[in-house]
Picture (cartoon, rainbow, N blue to C red):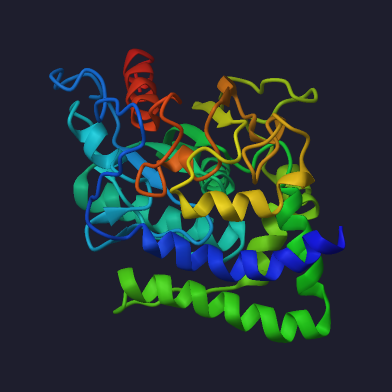
Length: 329
């Protein structure tokens, strides 16, 4: 455990920097078998959902930097099949409620200026409670919530341990300003004219065990009622879906795999994506919780690198958009 504690600080510091390394023009790596970008590329109505798809980024995330989205190539893959995709921007490091209010304000703006009445929110990681907050306080704006590796049924053990470090005076005095600066740098790259608040302590608390439990008591919609089960498919007119992975290291060229490996022994083999326990990601209808994808693979980062035989994340998002289309969403 001492070794794990010592790794948490460099892991936290490097996480944001490595996420920024993904913010560069498209560059293809040779990773063995190379599947096409996505299936059904010729079908221009395959992902044409009734309501726009809103991609909700997670911790250390961003909306769009230099034309590159946190959900790497996902907007393009969805739009190729007819979907309308909207990309909001929330604080990279902040609590669920603050990020949720930021997302809510943008959905209200989309409604007022673009005429959309409802939205399909697809969220990754910390984006999940962000989106769930909006569905809880303003269900009239939300057609569906779908989460990939989301902080749902429980929090992240990794986040809980880092939160413990943030409680100490010296860790708090040293670590929080560094993490907040990381968030500010990410924010400056996407919204320099309108900086967003960065509160690292709140971010890690709300995705840890204690913070997630408190949030779930106030916003239980879609959560399972039995351990590792499924939640209700629909609550207050909002449909709920989720999927997750059980891999940690999937590609030797992916720098984010090193971060996930640093704390891999926090989890039983085959039971986590390197950040979230398999059962913790459950929400509503569980599409699948055992993709051979790790936590960053689930948003198609970094630069789409993954195991050559694993499921292409772009196909997961396209297939799910088609599912929502068939469900009248």
